[in-house]
Image 1 (cartoon, helix red, strand yellow):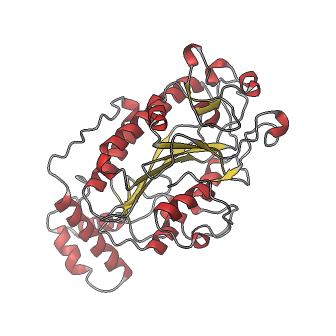
Image 2: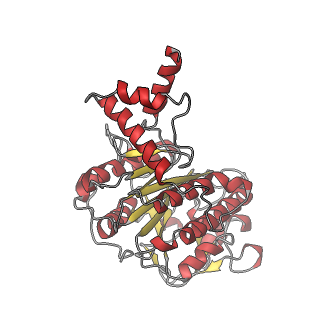
Image 3: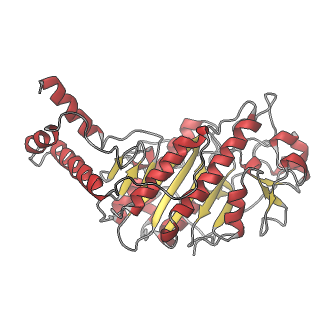
Length: 403
């Protein structure tokens, strides 16, 4: 083997544990511990078009018909019960699977959630959320990394990203990233694994990284079923395949029983400044059908499975001149699982009158996103010290959406 080829192989092995921002992640331990799956909607999902207050006159007056949910006609949504402020809320017309999960009391909706300090920058908002902080500061790790450091899961693969590790896992030595279990291997000359194993056999950080990578490859290749095929009915639309593949990857890894304890993946494309209607319809369809298939795929794990869906912020109440919506503040979160008190909406709803809006244009954030995450971490994932996970946030009364 040429020296250059050997060095490239070493780099490939080490790169398997390198952190990359803004992608997919997953994690949960062997045995009876709960599994947490975080799905991040990158781009700023229009919360008022996904779960809409259709009986609010301010909402109806502010938006053209193609940018809002209606109680009749082609934009008729799925009417919800147990809503906020005795208003009629409805899910988007393309969200029928989410409606079914809600009706079956598996899905809870938390509205007017997000960053309470207000930023319309994608990068700033994602940076703050994934580091679990409220203002810019030098922070060397993400909130998920801090959680893992506290919980110390003992599974063979406690943290998985697919395909890349997000900023929320920055600083965690426990996370790996892969596209699929089948493809998680060291490519190239068959002698490379043996050479790396013997060459990096000391106590240095680099050697530990290489040895861990080689061990993880061995475990994954041994544990995965041959010719694995999911039996769930995942979406087959071309535009949904990246998201679908990530969900399948997470589901397969959970079923391999290798100690996966937390999981996250992304669904991007929600930055709908122009011609929102077509794009939003397809994104909602992808999210809804994908989430239903994923939940069905993991039927045997429902008692342990906790899924949380969120975005970095919402969109403004009024549409723009390009048939879209611009960056806003208040968003929403979905929580899914048998341990969730589903079939209800949670949070505080200020209203959509001009004087009730943030700066007169945005749905006001009344629930800090960390309050939602913190309740899941303590009620389902055995977190003991939220102050160390979210250092500049004070937790108050629970929202009550977790069993």
